[in-house]
Length: 332
Image (cartoon, rainbow, N blue to C red; front, side):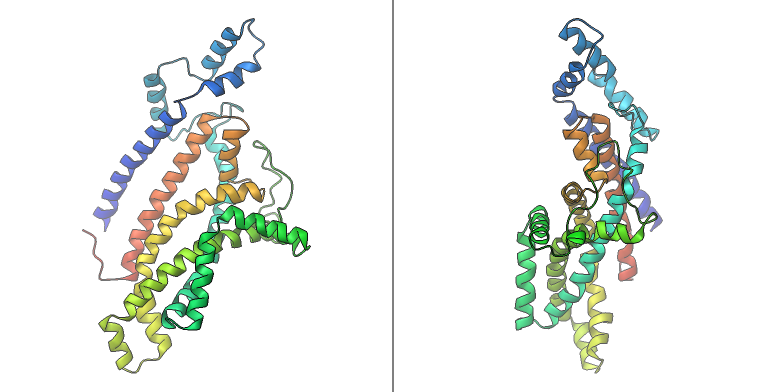
C-alpha cells in the first residue's frame, strides 16, 4: 500500500507539473488585453506606447517567456502562487479566504446527491422493469438533460413569480465584489442564515449529480445481483435487507466511488455557475471575476492549480477506499 501511494504521488507531481505549464502558456498566448487595460489608466508617460511599456514592466511581461516560466515554477516549488496584479496581495491568501464557501457547497452537493442516488438506485434495481423503476428512470433522465444553470434560473423564476419560498430558493444577500467577500455569512457566524444561502444551490447541484450516480449505481446493482455469491445468499434464506445492503450494495459501490471522484471535477465547474447565480463568494465566483472584471493571470493560475491539486488527492483517497470496500483488492 505504501509503495503504491508513493508511486501515485510521484506520478501526480508530474501531472501537476504539466498542468502548471499548460496554464502558464495558455494565459500568455494573448496578454495584449490585460496590458491595454493597465495602460489605459497610466499617468506617468505622455504617449500610449510609453504607457504600454510601463504596464508590461509592472506585470513582468517585458521579460522573455523562459524567464517568466522559470520564476513561476521556482515560486511554485516554494508554495508561492505569486501576487495579484490588481491588489498586490498574495494569491494564496486570497484563495484561502474564498475556499471555505466552495468546499461547503461541494460537500453539501455530494451529500444531497448520495442521499437521493443511493436509495433511488437500489430501489430501481431491485424493482427492475416495474412501474416504480420506469418513473425513477424517467426523472433521472430528465435531470440529466437539464443544465444546472437552466434549472437554477427556472427555480429562481418560479419562486419569485409565485412567491414560493423566495427567501430560500432565490439569491441571498448582495452582489459580492471581487475583492470584498466579507459580507458572506458563514456557518460559524450564523448557521441558520448560512443554510438559507446554501440550500438552493446545494439541492440544485445535487440533483444533477445524483441522477448520474443513480443510473450508474442501478446498472452496477443489476450486475451484482446476478452474481453467484448473491444467489447463494438468497438460497440461504437471508432477509432481503441483509442481502441487498451487506452483499450487493457494498460491492456495487466500488465502481461508484470512481464515478464520484470524476464528478468532483464537474461539481467544481458547476459551482462556477451556481456561485455566480446565488452570489456565493467562493472559488468559482473568484476566478470568473478575475477573468471578466479585472483580468488577473496569477489568480487564474493559482485557482486552477489548487483545484488540480485537490482533485489529485481526491482520486488517491478514492483508490485507498477501494481496499476498505473490497478486502480482495491488493495494491502492487
